[in-house]
Image (cartoon, rainbow, N blue to C red; front, side, top):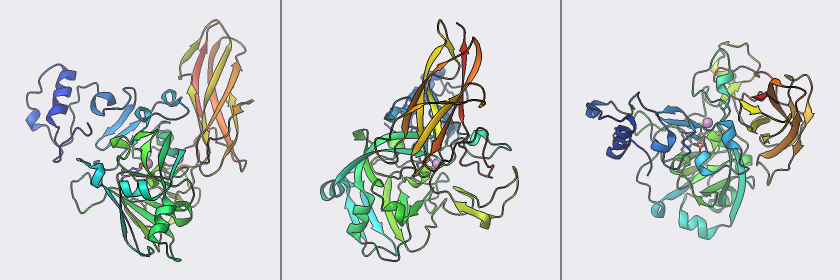
Length: 411
Ligand SMILES: Nc1nc2c(c(=O)[nH]1)N[C@H]1C(S)=C(S)[C@@H](COP(=O)(O)O)O[C@H]1N2
Ligand SMILES: [Mo]
């Protein structure tokens, strides 16, 4: 189980067999297929290539894997492993051995360098489980104009699984955190796409204050099972409410830094936005970018699926989730008249801090015809989602505009 590429980046024999049967013909020159290239004539389904993933996930990129979840597949209150999106920056590690996997704590602001096996973590620290919302900073990128380069996520780069592990703060305190600590930075076992082993695909982190929050976890389990390979097996950081890029997968080390972590994709324009509003398409000097922290308020409609047809009744129960970074969601409303009027929904409290919240309402359509259901959440500071695309930025981050679905009433 696992990746379809061998260590040198060519298709594994087993994957070639699967692909051949999908195409229904022998790939005569398969041996000349370049590194990391899939045959074009292929109904690529994540289920065939990514064991354990739902067949209706949408592949945005296969080198590296970037796979999103259609909104209607996010209807579960706890995101099942097979419906959890995948955002890889490099190649996941191969030949993982959970029993000798180690996690190192080091850095300028660590009192000592320490190493833990997963068994050490499990036996020496108290276990905690939290449902945590992980949303990629680039979720919604497809909505920006002029387009921003990068994976064209629509709504589906978000999840809220139940993670189990130990508190990051318990492990950091065990190694010892010096007074001058300002940040943590992770390293994972994934490798750079170029194959250059001196390069790191991603190494991000959070300020020490966020790292020391109760809900910041070093997790070995998702929904009471091993973490799927593509989501970071056997160990990962889970930092709810912040760009999911801070939740390091295949976690090998955490450095306690006395400076803002300067690892791969912390600097330049990665996971950063301009410090001031800019005109769409404007060039912004690199020194005018700031690091994205807590994610903005957002909601999705997970039921019904967009394009639903209502027959024999004018009433429809609509539901979904809403989240607001480090804050709570205080209100969710829906509109069926393009935002002219709004109906307040029933909104549940989160199961724990930094978990998404479920909302629902029953809509009574006035007559048959075409409608759009728009959902809008408001956070505990009174800030709402914009109905249209918010502040354009060069990398297309933080699009939290209202999610809309189409409904046809034919009664
Ligand atoms: N080691 C490592 N950690 C990583 C990444 C990665 O490529 N390598 N991708 C990050 C990004 S950008 C996101 S959005 C989340 C995605 O988590 P998921 O693939 O489990 O949904 O993992 C983050 N952690
Ligand atoms: Mo991301």
